Image (cartoon, rainbow over all chains, first blue to last red; front, side, top):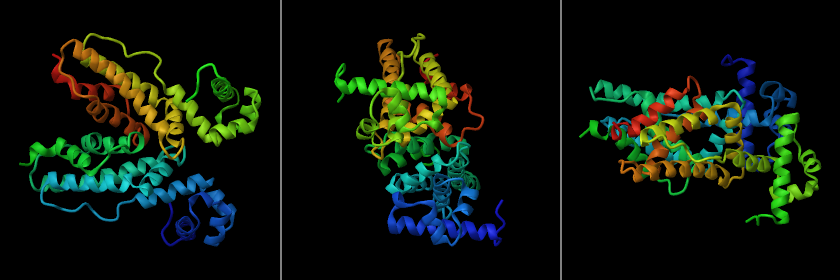
Amino acid sequence: MVRPGGRSARVQASVHAAVRELEAEVGREALTVPLVATRAGVTPSTIYRRWGDLQELLSDVAVERLRPETAPEDKGSLRSDLEAWAEQFLEEMSAPTGRAYIRDALLGGPDGTNAGQCSAYAAEQIDVILDRAADREENAPDVETVLDRVVAPMMYRILFRPEGLDTAYARQLAVGLVGSNDR
Amino acid sequence: MVRPGGRSARVQASVHAAVRELEAEVGREALTVPLVATRAGVTPSTIYRRWGDLQELLSDVAVERLRPETAPEDKGSLRSDLEAWAEQFLEEMSAPTGRAYIRDALLGGPDGTNAGQCSAYAAEQIDVILDRAADREENAPDVETVLDRVVAPMMYRILFRPEGLDTAYARQLAVGLVGSNDR
């Protein structure tokens, strides 16, 4: 665990910031550990010790960028909340930057911690939507079912079958699952 | 296109074979283009010219290994065919070698051709199952629906959420989709 405000947290923040800046300035293909270290004001060995290699570092930065910044919008019903969330998720994840981050997250470490974190972010957002539905006394599926029926098909197609993917598809998945609960 | 029997096809076959042999002998972390070239009896520049880099070559080999060798077994009904196929798919893809091949396939080239080929293999197998169901005059979903409801959830969980994944889950996805068509 990284203690907020400690040296370890400061190193992480400055290294992550250096990666983001350099990605924007020189492009990600040109990134190297020494380049990131110089920009972050740390030694390359600090980076190697903490992250192992560049791929692992990029994976951590990717996960950080995939972290949702706000709770899903409350649009008044489970169906509209889930439709809107699925649409936004598909838009963000199927954009070139989204794809690059997912790829990086998947590549980080054979233990799959970073990929698991991406899925945890989606599950947290869906939990918020389902809690609201429960407050409204709407019938709602559980979070694992929403992952299977809405998130998984979008992610599968983004990674393996991207042709013709559009927001209508995202809405159709959401409505296909909860449409009949909300007339 | 690679003409079967031509020089290009021979080079491909010997380079792929060299990768498979060396993976087994020295492990995949130790693979390098010069090592593969020596074993395959070609020059490293032949490999660089054709594949670009090691990652691209490993991606091609992975897709080749993910190619199904036989048609799905005919078990007499859509439901049993799909259950058996999903179970086998999950077993193969969630094994360490399956995961490594999927990862390699996803990493091959930013155009995603190899990832698309993996999905095409699954779609072809499902087509065989659905054609048989049509011959038996069973009600059957279309192939895109089977991809969304059976293949996508398995692949999503293999990549992002592997904990507790088992063949009961694969069967449940198959039965959840076609169970009511086959009593």
